[in-house]
Image 1 (cartoon, one colour):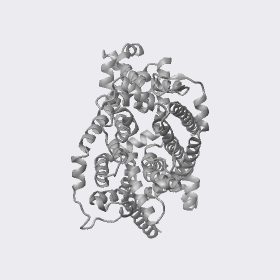
Image 2 (cartoon, rainbow over the protein chains, first blue to last red; image 1 turned 30 degrees about the vertical axis):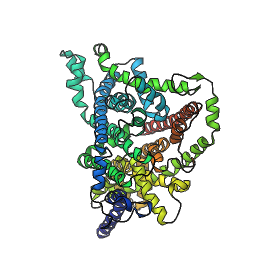
Image 3 (cartoon, one colour; image 1 turned 90 degrees about the horizontal axis):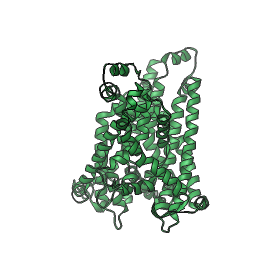
Image 4 (cartoon, rainbow over the protein chains, first blue to last red; image 1 turned 45 degrees about the horizontal axis):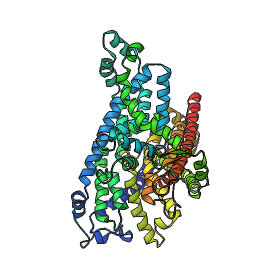
Length: 280
Length: 283
């Protein structure tokens, strides 16, 4: 019996290994093509390994970084993601604490509005939101976090509220009686308790903002500022021949930071995803 | 305590509230109003009643996108959930290298839709060339199945994580009891594990349904609606009505389509909410 189970386990290991290799193939294919010379990349030969004649070394990467402006895009994407996530974490957690601890009709309405905004598809507001951003001069990467704070508030507030409802108010009341004002209570008592939820929210929002394409495209001036998603779309959308080599290198460079961060923070990312799915 | 906190409302509420007004509430209200207008910018709108809605519903590309989207939702939801559950079952049994497999299956989920779309466009076009069939941009059926494969690749890992969490929360004693009573492996699965998994299944089903309904980036990058709007999902159809067509009437029609789209998604979410609530009562 046990021998059979062990044999079955080994069989499954082999099957899963084969599936995993197939699963990773698309990324390997991009890596392979990013090392080929321009003329060797075409629709029919994407699966061919680079040979001595077609091997281009890191030329495509140099091209992507040098002339295609990959580094600028990376900078904008990192800047927008970091500022937006920080703003969301601080302001939305404060907002959530207020509306869970103060019970009025207004706070209840605000909570429902946040839940509602999570559901609404972006296409519903894309036109009016981009014209709003233009009017208020929010159309640069430096202040785009305001828009992300507004549009991403729903999920964050919803998750923070879900956690805060389970925290007893006794500690907070005690600190208020001891003479702390609400702001001190919030930063010394509530914020430390929120840390696990903060990590989950940060991961979910960062995954969304880093990869977001439509919102920055409609709001930012594509000739001045391009995030990584915009850069890759710009490659394909531009008229004339698409330069496949640098494009493959760009895709590879876009995936690389995500994979590195994933391998380092895997535990937190998976926890965050589970928490978000159960609450959302 | 409530009174003391209330005095601090400008600090706690105002920043998020302002951003929320700018980023959601005002654009949403404007959007609903503009769906009844003819406009090219927000300021030059003239009220024309419900004729935008009439044109939107009569638009053949829109109704095609709707049915295409429904078919896509059904096929992708079934495929992703069966795949995710199967992988989760294998990875919760005692096999070597479970964590490594988990890492591999979840990874595509972190890659953005635009990048995913292009990777698969290159890959699928190469497969189609080898099979001597028309490329993705020329064949709507290939575009459909391409999008399904892409979504499976991206989403199976995510659903797997949720199913694994669900499977691990089933107490071992329950499964042991079933085994002692002489249940076969299949019986244990269908009669014990599956009912215990119902909460996870509800979550995953609705996640995949709303994801597939709202899909935009992948659709745009993989086929861009080609050939001739035949592979457009709703979100991309709305985007194209706004920014791809010339003529002053199209923005209003696009906005009307967006309102209809929004209503569909809200209704699905309300059904989800109701079903999850019922589940909670039963437990």
